[in-house]
Amino acid sequence: MFAPENGETMCKGVSKGEGLRFAAATMGVPLADTVAIGDSDNDLTMIEVAGIGIAMGNGEQCAKDAADAVDTSGLAHAFERLGVV
Image (cartoon, rainbow, N blue to C red; front, side):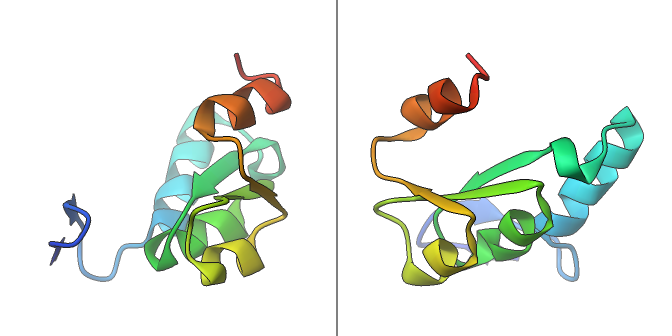
């Protein structure tokens, strides 16, 4: 599947949430220790599955509603606030 409005390629029946579960399990990281940052409806499962789900301030309302927090200062600020960088 292809989303022409944002250029993402997706596999039918596979969500970003399942991808996050797989990546965390493969690396031995508890889901509670994961962070997901998204901005649209295709990010919802990832935001919901992550230990901390963050929506970008300019994102869709559905992402903001699903998130634990909304960051209006951009991705770099979100990483900085979380202590990732």
